[in-house]
Length: 68
Image 1 (cartoon, one colour):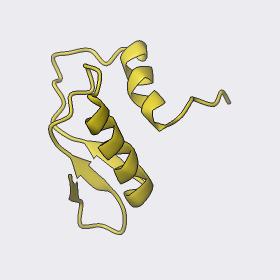
Image 2 (cartoon, rainbow, N blue to C red):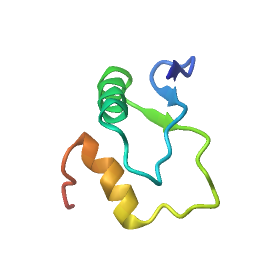
Image 3 (cartoon, rainbow, N blue to C red):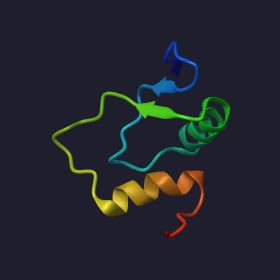
Image 4 (tube, rainbow, N blue to C red):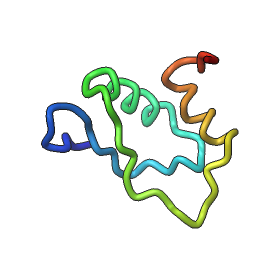
């Protein structure tokens, strides 16, 4: 993870959003999100498909979704 040089945000490398995160990856992402307030999960495989289920699995590491 590296700060993006701006006021907030961090760029994360080495994460594949199409597969489940390992516990240590999830913990590092959550801690970085609370510290930097914005995550950029860079270099994603554009050949894969980030389905609703995969997106929800990734997002649930940060808390349950709130319908609005």
